[in-house]
Image 1: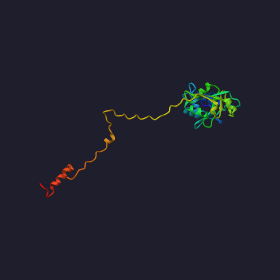
Image 2: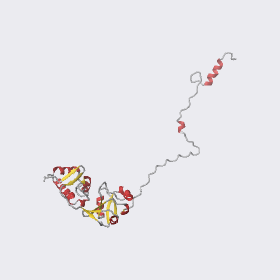
Image 3: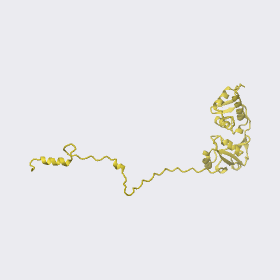
Image 4: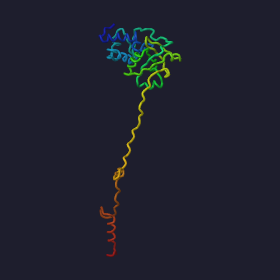
Length: 247
């Protein structure tokens, strides 16, 4: 195997353990061909002390430097090429009475009304303990909301569960009737602010009508005569000028 810098060598050992031996310990659900989204892997690493520094370029370096290759990075997915445990997924006819999930607060109201739905085409990931569920939930939100699943009641209704590793379980969408969770906080109603009423005039005052004040004043009607001369003056002058008028 190619000699790597110490940091990358340690990261290679960590990823081998996470992706090939115990993905369930880190809440990573591998696809049938062993792939995991890079985003999910980085979220799992950020929750482990001392591994929050890992970025995509570290994964690129590992896949490019290791000879023979140990990891395969395709687009936004990664897998380990070393054969992993053969039976992570196992049938589970009778799951534990209660299982747990932790959801972000922004999904609280939707889960309260519609139940739990798996992301995309994947399964729901449930934990056997509250602590594990909250640990996984904190990858998505600092203060997740704990959801308790009545797993045995759901299994009796026909829903199929699978065990995954030692403490995790996989399930399809779970209806609201099998979930226990706190009621979501009520959102304040948004109302349009009311316009303040116009003040009433007090005795001895009057209200200015600005609209009327801004209208242009009507033009003065001017008659014939000198410029600026009122019409009545011009008319009087004309009468004096008529011939035959008595003096």
